[in-house]
Structure formats: structure tokens, C-alpha cells
Image (tube, rainbow, N blue to C red):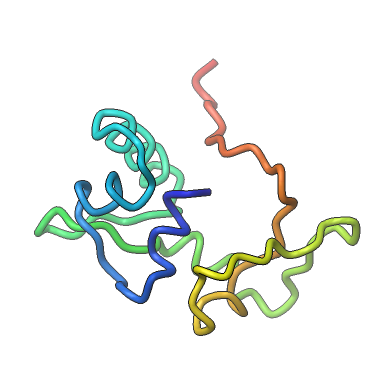
Length: 104
């Protein structure tokens, strides 16, 4: 979730180094996780090698009938800008970050 939150600082596109610095993750870990997020559709990578929120994630966020399980309360993050918070789905505070591996 930290990688997605990195985009909440008001910049729609970030380099891999920017994401690594904002999350505190090693560059190799950031590369691996952004690749998985791109594969799933949560992030997209532009030709100039910068990342932005992906179409699949934006479609989920903007779906008119999108609902979250009632026990889940939105994570209150003061760093998240006001223009992005209303578009993010509610997430449990201890939500694991993972991308399904359908190759198993």
C-alpha cells in the first residue's frame, strides 16, 4: 500500500527512484513490487519510464457501485491529499499487500 500512497503527495507520475525514496524500500524491492502492480493494473508505466496509477485501479476506484465490506474503515492518513482520498476505496488498517500469482 505504501507504493500506492506515494502517489498521494500530489504528483501524478513518479520515477522508480522517487517511489523508492518515498516508501523507504530498497530500489530492487521497489522495482519488483512496481512490476507486480503494473502486471495487475494498479500502476502503469509510461514510455519515459515513470509510473502512474493504472487503469484497472482507477476503474475500481471510480466504479459507481463500488462498496467495501462494512467492517472495513477507511485508513486515515494525514499525508494523503484531499483530492485523492475520496477516490480510494476503504482499506482495513492491516491489509496485506499482494498480487495474486495465477501461475501456481
